[in-house]
Length: 278
Image 1 (cartoon, rainbow, N blue to C red):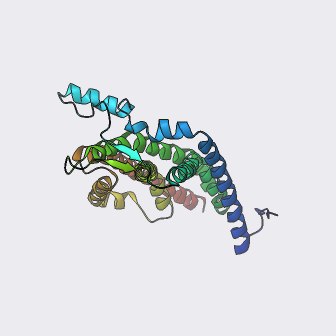
Image 2 (cartoon, rainbow, N blue to C red):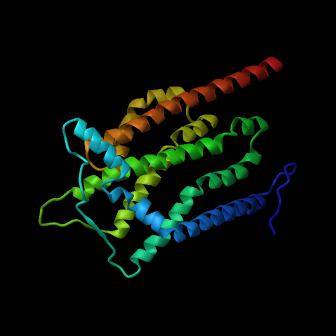
Image 3 (cartoon, rainbow, N blue to C red):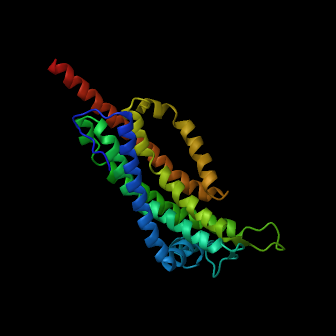
C-alpha cells in the first residue's frame, strides 16, 4: 500500500522515493491511457496529423503560397509532394503506430505530468512560494502546447518541403522510410515544445539564485549565437526557415529577462519587508 506523507512529519529518504514512485506510476498510467486512445484513432493520428504536412492543401503551405504569390513568386505552391513514404520492414508500420501513440500520449498528458511533478515538490516549498507559483502548471502547459503548434505548423512543413524536394541529381528518387519521416515530425514538435519552456526555466534558475537579469543581458550576444545554432539544427539549412525559428526564441529570451527582473524585484521587496519587521 502507498504511504501517505504527513505534512507535519519530516519524510525519510525512502519515504520520498516511495512518494516519487507513485507520482511516476500515476503519470505513466495517464500516458498509457491516452496512448491507447491514440492507438484506436489511428486514421486521425496518421492521415490527418502525421501526414497532414505532406498534403498541398495543408494550412501552412496555403498561407505561404498566398504570400509568395503576392511577392511575385510561386514558392510553396505545388500540386503534389515530390516524394513517397514507404515501410521496408515487416514490423515497420506496427512499430510506428505503437510508438507514435505513446508519444501522442506523452504530449497530451503533459499538463498532468507537470501536476504530478508539482505535487511531489510542493510540500518542500514555503507557503508564500506555493502561492506565488500557483500558475506554474497552466503557464508551462500553455508554453509547451504553443511550442508544439509552432513545431507542427511551421518547422515540420518547412523541413518537409525543403528536404522532400531536395535532390543532388535527377537520377535519385526521394522515397523516405516511414520511421525517418515520423522521426522528423516528432523531433520538430517535441524540440519546439521543450524550447518554449525557456521562460519557466529562467524563472526557476532566478528563484534559486543561478541567474539574474544582468547576467541574461550581459550574455545576450552569446544567446543570439546559440539560438542561431539551435535554429540551424532543428530546421532545414535555408536562411528563411532559420529566421522564422530564431525570432520566437529570441522573443522568449527577452521575456525571460523580464520574468527574471520581476522575480528579483519581488525577492528584494520580501527582504525589505523582513528587515522592517525586525
